[in-house]
Image (cartoon, rainbow, N blue to C red):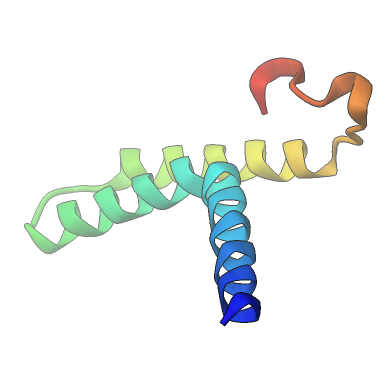
Length: 74
């Protein structure tokens, strides 16, 4: 039972990390999808999602260590 709890905790921590890295992109893509399904133009949402994805890529490529752990809150 303990092993299962540890595995679930590790999955939850990794999901939180992924969502914090790509959360804005996912929200904008979902908003764009909802706008398109309702017949509206979602070009602004799609553009914002692309910008956020590029920012997430830049943040992921930035080397971090204990000295720069919370730099720029990324």
